[in-house]
Amino acid sequence: MSQPGLAAGARRMLARPGRDRLEEQVEALAEAVRDSRGRLDDPVLDRADQVVEHAYERLRLSGAHTVVTLAGATGSGKSSLFNRVSGADLARVGVRRPTTARALACTWSAEGASELLAWLGVTDRHEVDAADERLAGLVLLDLPDHDSTEVAHHVEMERLVARADLMIWVLDPQKYADAAVHERYLRPLATHGDVMVVVLNHIDAVPVAERDATVADVARLLSDDGLDGVPLLTTSAATGEGIDELVDLLAARVAEQRVRRARLAADVVAAAAALRADHGAGEAASPARRDRAELVDAMAEAAGVPMLARAVERSVAARARRETGWPATRWLGRLRPDPLRRLEVGRGSAPELTRSSVPEPSPAQRARVDTAVRRLADRASAGLAPPWAHAVRAASVSRRGETPDALDQAVVGTDVDLTPRSWWWAPVRLVQWLLLALAVAGAGWLLALAGLGYLQLPVPDPPSSYGLPLPTLMLIAGALGGIVVAAAARLVARLSARRWAR
Image 1 (cartoon, rainbow, N blue to C red):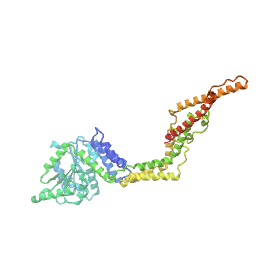
Image 2 (image 1 turned 180 degrees about the vertical axis):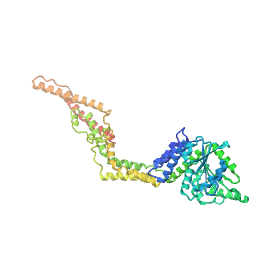
Image 3 (image 1 turned 120 degrees about the vertical axis):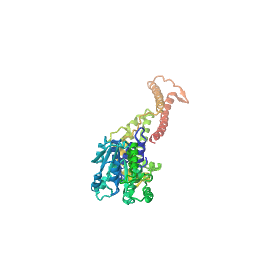
């Protein structure tokens, strides 16, 4: 994963087959916000959260209706344009508009639009007969002026612009270069060019000879705002010039039924871009093998692993000696306690609260672990943006107080399975018993001969070999052979114990 949760989460969401791509993108954004809480700036995350919530709500509502907003400054002719497109006599609204904070809606085919209008929060509604069937499904909103002196007007206008499927910005030839509309609205919406239309109204007030230059200048300003390719129409609500072209454009967008999803996708892209800008483009570095090895060694030392390894070595060697030693003396090894069991480890299923007998980490061992953790965190977060780097460092020490107990539990729960028997134990044990039997037979023979002599009975001469009586040779060979085999087995056991310890 790149920086925690963002790119990986998005890739996982977008990779799921058979899912709607827009829904995948919304879910990916929601996951990114969840993973970034407490790390990135809250305003950016809150805005992204609002986008996610808005997207889910709009997708749930009517997809057969297209919400179009008319937004503009005082005197731009929004309401007159609204009346022209709707074909309804709403002039009274034009008189009232500068003093109200409420929007007005016109719907073409209101069936199914009630819940949508309730979500929009628009109570002033007007249904028109769809004389032009191409507009069936259109919901046209006339918004308060964005430059009104009433704060409530700004709030209402911005709220509905955020919920619109298609935004129409109405400009006045006298005020189209006003910085307020460009810097506050158009430029921040540069990512929404596919769901935006700009209308230069009152074109009848511009001398014919100057119209081309005026339109070109508006196009230049839009290009500076990052809105190249946005449809730019010229209209006159007074004369009706350009109204047909505007209606044709609305009809085409309504027929496509794409603007709703295009608007939501643009919102998601913009929120993701803001999240990415705050998130940073750096990637988490993979810790070097040396750093990982240093951390493992430090934790192993603090957990008493070297002591445990030595105990394993002694335990394995002792068991091997008990299994392969000289039968006459091997029982003595059972009297010695198992070094591994004395440490209360190696059970593999120890209760959670059971502690080992391994000593607590010393201050020096704790300091070594802390240093290794910090170094690993610093290396891993070297390429990250400051919020993520801080989060990585904070996470690296967040459970510092739990580390000793966690290491001890890891040691207690380690299954040091010493029950398997090595393959060579059985033949060595057989040889030992044969040698012991040989020594016992020789000793018994000698005792029998000694008994006959003690009773003053005839004592037969035993066979000889290599100049020694056979019973004596049997006793010596059995005893010495057992000792030699035990010594050889002890050497092999030591090598095997070292392997177990490693």
